[in-house]
Image (cartoon, rainbow, N blue to C red; front, side, top):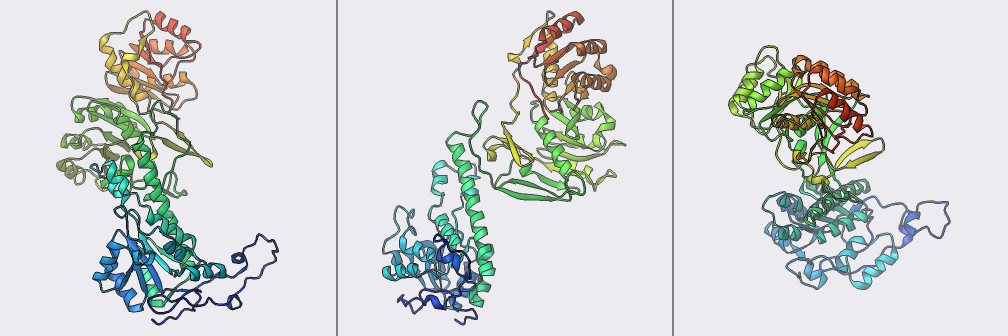
Length: 576
């Protein structure tokens, strides 16, 4: 093996089998000048770090054998000595590489069905020994231990296996790698002297270093950083799975955990954030493919930051409705929503609720998007930015991507079913300056059986469906929020107001004459009775609100005076 690197690695060389040699004297090491005289300073603090480390002996233990057909010839050509475990050893031998089995090094066989292979001082001392420490080298010589210049390890595929619906707890537990992460962390910790390679995608760079004859310090530092990132994500995946397996995920009645581990990866780079001067991207927990983390864009321009915020609002709202439904979102608030026996009918009604706001909106349905839905959106004067659905009929896609003038712009997005909060242990996070707020998502459906009519006038039975629909919608409006619904159609919304009476005014103005006979929902209690007179004058037939104000009695009295039945739900739905 022809090295063009300095023999900066102290320790052992020599023919196979290993024969110890005397370590180099400290006088031949480059010393790092220092003015510190504290006895706490270690020798390593006072020496120049070693840059080039020859690659003479490596340890390989990989689950994924991809790329070994390239790596093995490079190791053989360079004369690098290789130690390995059973399955990897067999694979390397297939490519003509002479390998010493780890069991021969440790003097101990693999036991417990392979659970214990490399966990032995002979292996870990060879990885963790510091080449510039005479005491470390003396220990190695005393016990007949050789150093490893590089460790090549990839881990059991825990994440991909656990993503399978048929993965049993027993299988998942067996795929929790113990020796692999230990080897990775040991080599990464000792990166000053040992290179750590954690995936086949790094083999090309390693082969280049083997051909060159050594690794450089900057190279080893980068590999170590990637190695710690890999073990962190691996442990995060295991921690998340184990939390679910142990039944400690955050539930409606459970306390939030003291600590949550999330490993986020960039899924989608975005052109910019809310405004063109802001950089942005979509991140998701590694391995998660539910909710917006798993969307599949079928066509159209790239999604924007604001598109994704609106998609979140749209899919979360439409997911709360059991009947075929459509919602139309503008700036995270519904400007139209409806349920009907057919999703196309619901879509037509929702788009008609506020046509001016619906232009350039985000549309979501909770049933497959069919050709009738597409035909409705092809009407003159209509334009939507994004359409989200569980799936799309092929003929609907063909219409939307060929006929309208905006065919090149509209994004069609399939959103997978499933609990999007699994990866975050049932917790919804929201960023604030320098921190994260955490709460359980407000996604649990309300139970009308728990509601109470608080007025003298009883509630007509036919009004309950409309009240339920209205209270479902208002929970996804920005507070202070009011929703006016005629049957199961949103006809007016007042959102994001600093006073509730202003929200009432806006919602009734939007509804216009459609407020007559409609129902009105409030996301929180009425703090004063003044809104009731506006509601009466508009002809609203019933009110649903959480209750809980110290002036509830005054509000109830005002509703009685107006002859409007009112229901208390005892659950508030603020959304800021």
